[in-house]
Image (cartoon, rainbow, N blue to C red; front, side, top):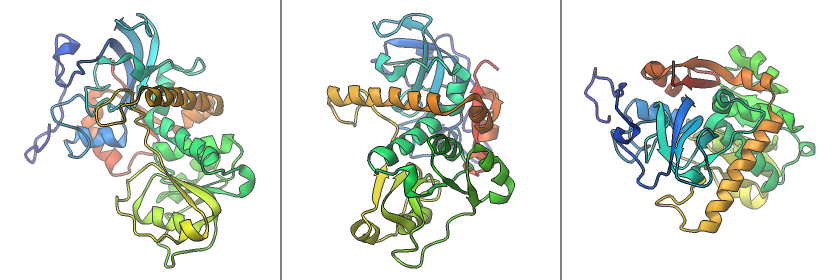
Length: 343
């Protein structure tokens, strides 16, 4: 719920007789999934707390990603018993998401989990991991950043996206510098994931162009941190920008772009397939679905059990979501929280 009176909970568990009784069903859904796991992302935490700006309307079942097995399908893409994973496509924002034992969606929104990953592991990685994979992929493909070019900075490195990005970049041969406000407490952990150095939060850069420090940047913070990262990026380097935890304003200049050729790469992991408000182009839909599958392949080949285990901050049940949502918003959780919907 939204606009909850002070002292009342914005979210509660409700028993319903069937998935069709959930409040925000997609009329185009042709697959029903029996969910085993989901995860608690920043967006999810906002929705659980009833905050505006993330969902179309309340009430809704949150959970922007989930994994499970197909319970029913009228699509030739999936059969009963198939293992599937969903990220993106505004699940949990436009339509009911993964904080339930069952969910319905369109067949094209689902992908098969990589054979090397269990369903639980796919959700430890989850949306944050897919976004981190896109950042690394974009830095290399569109930013032309290579390991020989120098260190890559990861801001917000204590969070789930940041931790997965550190592990991915290290696995792909990059020198990684992790930036976090909890450098002292989490330094050893981030080094174990692959960071060669751990530094505090980036300070505002007083000049439009600072010292050239980074060949590339994965910035999940935004705001003043993104502005400083742009000013410090090396000639013909690139910055992947997927996050806004530090604010949506960007006070910068054009000089990093026109004097150093720095590329700012926006990263949105919605990758929509036939979704209202996005391009009405089936060819692009198929391309984005293929990109999602490619990101899961990249994650599977780059992250071993040890790395996935290291970013796993803990497992909670549905009843614990209201307790942990404020902790996610407040940056009190380091890593990824797995949600076991059966717990």
